[in-house]
Image 1: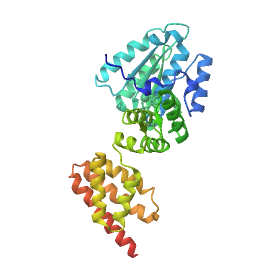
Image 2 (image 1 turned 180 degrees about the horizontal axis):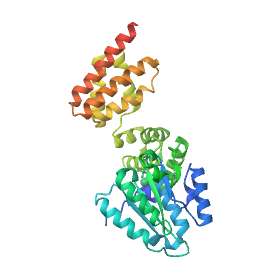
Image 3 (image 1 turned 120 degrees about the vertical axis):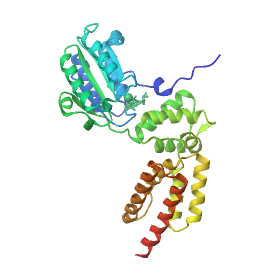
Image 4 (image 1 turned 30 degrees about the horizontal axis):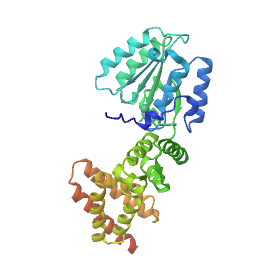
Length: 324
Ligand SMILES: Nc1ncnc2c1ncn2[C@@H]1O[C@H](COP(=O)(O)OP(=O)(O)OP(=O)(O)O)[C@@H](O)[C@H]1O
Ligand SMILES: [Mg+2]
């Protein structure tokens, strides 16, 4: 018998608004809609893994109770089936009456910012036409990508990135429940790789826990394809000091030990530039070099050559700045 592996992000997804961490103000506003049994069209904006979809689901559970199934629909706007299918589905859902005592349904449209301006115009007309029977929750990463006439019809909710404490708290809670040994350095590592994204944090914890006895820095960096930040900083400092040969050796270690791609390395170098103790003018210079190399790689230049060029330029920059 094959045991079904359950995603912890689903298993521990909050079921009620009050279980959502950190988004206190948002939760309060949504709870007041539940109390009034009414809801405006909403726009949920924020970075990935901060609880937008979860909030839409909890809101619908609490409003509809047993009628949740028939009254709530979640669609992804970037769905491969195309905009026409979405249009038809939205209309069919929106124009029919809701079940139960709440006189409207809820349609959550994920990645609404993927819609073209034209598609958004059509959506706006649908929203207006069926307002009585359907309220829309548009979910986006950036609210600025939504056309003004829709924005002005929606109540805006901004979901900030989750704090370190909130994510750490959730990681400890889950590892207790799952009987996973979570080291302090493991928490640090998960926080580093997840950058305020709760989904990524929980997924990383789950993957790392399957990797070894306990979740520590080693297992976390192994499963995420990211290098330890100390090692990236070391490479950066070696090259800035002009030690090109040692810096390249370090680079190869990173590529081999962690299976990083060129782009991964460049991203991490960029991030660590702002975590090392060097003068502001150096950081400007480095950021500039990183930007150039990142661009060349995105244009398909050979990664190995570009990474060498990156370190070479750092060495040169280090020498020049050192002289002034
Ligand atoms: N504020 C939060 N409180 C508790 N759990 C959270 C929170 N935010 C995210 N999570 C957890 O992370 C997972 C992903 O959250 P969710 O799907 O709500 O993110 P999202 O904001 O919709 O992200 P995306 O923009 O990538 O769709 C959830 O299953 C849940 O377990
Ligand atoms: Mg989502």
